[in-house]
Length: 331
Ligand code: NAX
Image (cartoon, rainbow, N blue to C red; front, side, top):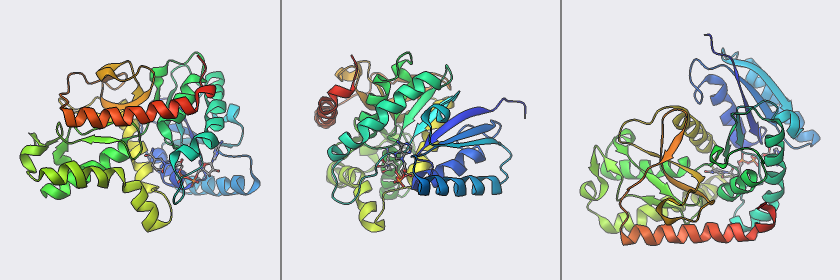
């Protein structure tokens, strides 16, 4: 094992997603089985929270993970992001029952301006940032616009949980393994407007509408099940998704640092370059491919009128969120 350790910051490290995510990172699930890691655990400067964070660190130590080369628990963003190659921004105020994401914008805007700044000041030159904390697209937009010197293409927001949820629903309906489902793009915002494009998704290499003939189920039940899954889990558990969200963060990192299998794509929200007519600069989920280092937005995916209308709706929501945080976005 000759690789030098990379530094990975996780914010909200004492929270429920953190409690799953940190152990998966330390085990090698995200960055690979031969990649040592030093984990920076950033939390709020609150006595109780910092005590809980110490407990998490003790448990991480007690796993004796071979790849874990250091822990940096802190409430100081400068220390939290010092020299980090990846920053996973999980910490935010989670959505509770009945709370709309727009209510969260104001509360979270401040966190992400500060963290964008601290990342720009302290992180390694190759830093990449994945925002999980909701509303994650707009939080990523705020962080990216407050991190001078870091290319905006290095900021991502997580839609892999939506992709995984959609894959599972389709696999269940078609009675196939989830691995049979490929080319599933989530378009737009990680919110109830997000569009899981089943028209271009494949099951064992065949387009979904050829395999699942129940069109009404696809256009209505499938889409709304995926869109409302987060709310359904809050209702059932009394808490928002945690282990599945951590798993999706691991999937996102792994897919960005690993070449995408030929012909396939995956979902993550990235800085829009105007592809598919989406407003430039929005953090928008697209079909993405990676060569293990850089990513590209897959071009030429056919979109019918149904898809175009859904994508326009989610784009409009992101434009609206952007307008609500306009004062936090530097020109
Ligand atoms: P928790 O409330 O369990 O944990 C959040 C943690 O963040 C807390 O420990 C809190 O002290 C910490 N925190 C708050 N402000 C901070 C700051 N400025 N710096 C560092 N730490 C800070 O929430 P959890 O269930 O872990 O969820 C975290 C975020 O993920 C929420 O915003 C949630 O809405 C979001 N999610 C995003 C998903 C996605 O697919 N993008 C899905 C799951 C989840 O809902």
